[in-house]
Length: 293
Image (cartoon, rainbow, N blue to C red):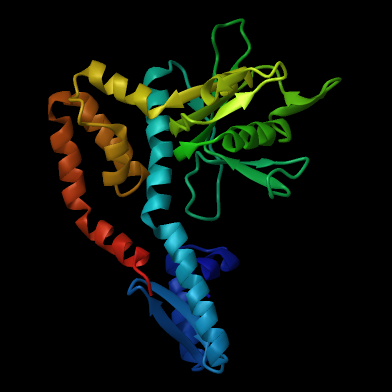
């Protein structure tokens, strides 16, 4: 088992878990450790069957590839881009936060589901939730964000809406079935929508995927819109949010990079290039994860 799994089970911090593991290995000599990708410790018992051990290690390697690889990193960075622009352009936005046992960003929110959606039984995650109060006498509006890096298809849109409808926080029963509560707005942030996918209506006419999303009462935000804001700020057309996502180590660096670009738009591409150079070791590690065993 890995260090993060043990830390979660013990309910303690990483340094406490590291001390406990060191002490356990002193007391029990049959506990062994192997380092995966020269970076992650995997603990096992010496008497573990060789075939079972090899299978378990390979499963752990595949898990690391999925959770620590470039696709996962860039996907989380895209969430930070959407959050940064929302916070920058929305007056009075108050983001929800939630404590998690894992290292998951506190602004990612886990919702309780009343009905399973898309293979999820009791819970589903949304990327951000924030509230805006339009005026003194106006009720607050709650916005719920789902981010998708890569090409978005209809199933992504439908899945997000079903999660909102069947969540305890944002859904409500109506005479016409399950729907969103009044004052709740879903926002879908996509790097791009599938331009070839269309949706057939009851009258047999067809509309684009973006038009369909709007008809489902979801607001759309795209990378092109964020890039337009950068252009209007004075950044060169080669400096894009997509490049920021790929170059940045994590969500914190995404925010820092965007702040720097916003303050010094004429230097935007140079700032991205600097970030990319500083993260050469990370890119090398990700290429190693993607290499065949």
